[in-house]
Structure formats: C-alpha cells, structure tokens
Image (cartoon, rainbow, N blue to C red; front, side, top):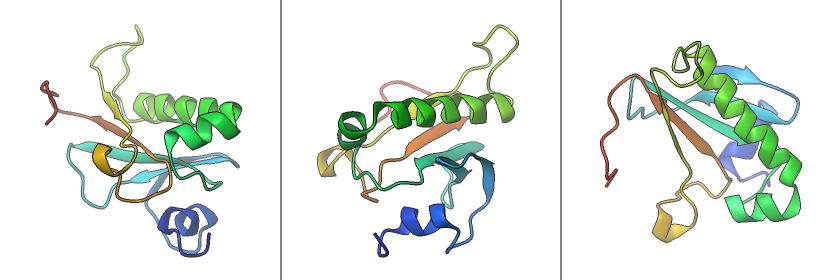
Length: 119
C-alpha cells in the first residue's frame, strides 16, 4: 500500500508527531486538531475500514483499542478512577461515515467538553 498515507506514516517514510507506538500500532497528533487533544491511532498494517480489521485480525483491533486508551491516559484524559475527566473515541467508516483516509484510524479527542450530537 505504498500510496496509502497512513501506511507511509506507519512505516516511518513520512514523519509524524508520534505520541505512542508499538510494533503493531502507531499514535500521532492530528495535523488539523478538532480538540486540544486530537490523536490518531492506527494499525501499522493496512486495513481499509473498521469492519475489515475486525474480520481479518480481531487481536490487532484489540491492540488498536488498547492503544487509544493508553494515549488517553498518557494525555491526561483518564483519571485515577479510570473515567474522569473523559474523552471521546471516533471511528469514521466508509464515505457516508466521513472516512477520508481509507486506512482504519481512531480519533482520540479530549481536553474540552464534547457536546452531543456530534454533527
């Protein structure tokens, strides 16, 4: 997937503001943040959508979710009780869901009040 932006970020070909990583998962700051904390969490391996990842490698999906929680904790969005002050996890899947980059990615958002509905 040499043309996939997130594959290229995951491989280190394109630099990113990395905040957390493992051999299978990468988390980096969004270049157009929508909150004081806006970090994208991706599998290094290419999977176009959440459904594709869940079907082909549920263990990796678990690693990506655990990465999102690790980022939230690291960024001060998870208190000692595991809940406060709070954060939002967003996954856009498919064109109607607002997915622009077709490599599954989770948005960790926090540092401000998150209203509902999101829009």
